[in-house]
Length: 131
Image (cartoon, rainbow, N blue to C red; front, side, top):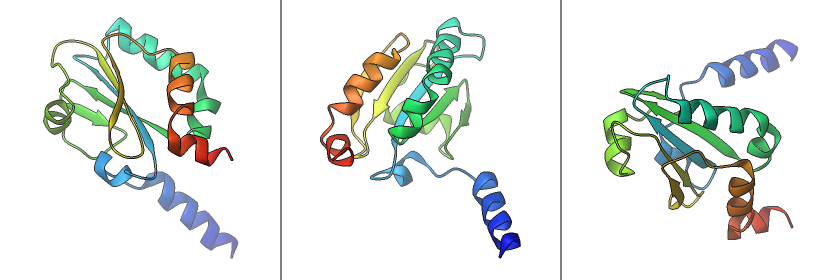
């Protein structure tokens, strides 16, 4: 039984992430895009998320990054995400996507934890989750 639990945990942690469409109705997505990993706005958004980790987990939020042509956190192609969510190729952008798949908040600068919390907590599905 213990071996089965360990194997299950290992498979879950090493599984290839699903695409954003596959997260619909299960997860909210914070889609963060930058032209390269050295972008100061990207570093700022990462810091905000790291400091707000408990809020991220509590709100079923997944962070997906599109840095140049590389995607982390989802199996989508960078070009597909850039086109679908109208993400610039050379500038920073962040989009909050609700569990229904719709874009709820978009900015060209990092979104504060307070703004994320306020926006997510106002969503009807989130209000239902907290009852």
